[in-house]
Amino acid sequence: MKRILALIFMAASWQSYGQDSFNLDQCIDYALKNAVPIKNAELDERIATARVKETVGIGLPQIDGTVSVDHNNRLRRFFSLYDPNSIFFGGQTIPGAEVGDVISAQNFFQLKSSADAGVRINQLLFNGSYLVGLQAANAYKDLSIKSSTQTKEEVVANVSKAYYAVLVNRERIKSFDNNIGRVESLLKDTRAMFENGFAESIDVDRIRVSLNNLITERSKFQRLQELSLELLKFQINYPMEQTLTIEGELTDRDLDVDVNSFVADWSYTERPDYQVLLANKKLQQLNVKNNFALGVPSLSAYANMGYSTQSPNVGGLFKTNTNIDDIGPVGPDKWYPYMSIGVSLNVPIFSGLQRSYKIQQEKLTLQKIENGERQLKSNIDLQIKEAISLFTNSKETLQWQQENSDLASKVANVTRIKYAEGVGSNFEVVEAETTLRESQINYFNALFDALVAKVDLEKAYGKLWNENKK
Image 1 (cartoon, rainbow, N blue to C red):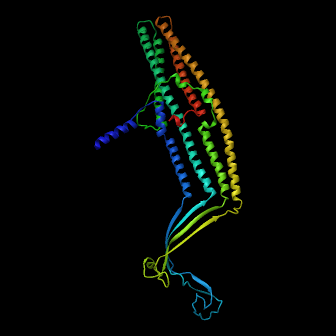
Image 2: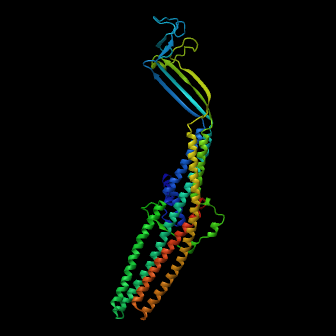
Image 3: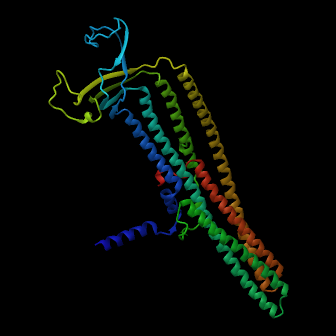
């Protein structure tokens, strides 16, 4: 049975962690569960939740228990005006002392050793600062949630860009493979023509140079692809030592963005960074309110209860003598109960104007946040305009580069046909292949730029990621 359970556990673990093939949604989902910034953001949320409970605990009964044992090698002396008829002197006369003289003597009312075991209970009845603190604790929790959302959006943006880089580089490598295969075939035909006397050795050399250039550039992009995969692993916190395979193909739908739907009913609150600013603003408003509340009286109730005893020595503190009554002469070795209850009212009267200046500072800080809010709105407006402009330009550039690549491919095919039929030159073929390679590189660069611009546009409108997209 244990073996069966172990096999089931291993199978479940393999299904959960053994997957090594991801599309974009799976990359994002993996990152949202494993990326270090998101894990830290979730920890911040848990810290905020604990802080809320900590603040709530201030209003609950506060109970402290104390146990103390004291031994005085030399007791304090007491001082009194001399009167032989008073209870302190018990009719004793002191030679040379007159009535009214200050007399110092051993403390007859305290033994050298004492012990106390008690409990103190304090219950807050009213405190304006505490009530504001409850609101601030919940506002702090809300801030942690908003910050977590902003972190998730950043992670999704970085993962999307890294994923698109892998797909684009993969298409680049496929393009290089096609070009290399075509040029190798051309080189083979040219060598055959040279051996039969229909071409010169320089023709073979030109095509060989073109082929070497293609192979070299392909190697560069292959290494770039490996680095892109490592970057994607890093972004999603995937084990670097494990193989990661990326699924998916680039299609026209990857660049479909309905900007009109973004604009409809749009507000600044859809941006996570703006939500974080509003949460900070609310916290600062509560800071101002709290400093006002510190000037309001506070009320609390308390109760003290316990047992105490005294003895001439420490050992006598822990003896129990049940034969001694509470009335009449008593021994020093019995524990006696005590209890007190009360209400405490604290009324702030004058703080040297400290509270007033503190409120002034908090109000000025709130004004800075409000200034930052206006600036953030302007920045968001600018970011949206820039994102729209960059996305529009990127799509137009992509269309032109697509057309250039198609035309270059057409020219390369025609020149190869002409060369094979003996009506074209070898130089034209090599030049056409070079132009085709450059146009393809430009196309894939434009494609990646357009994909990045799309991510930035969605992020500018706050549409890249939200809780509903989990």
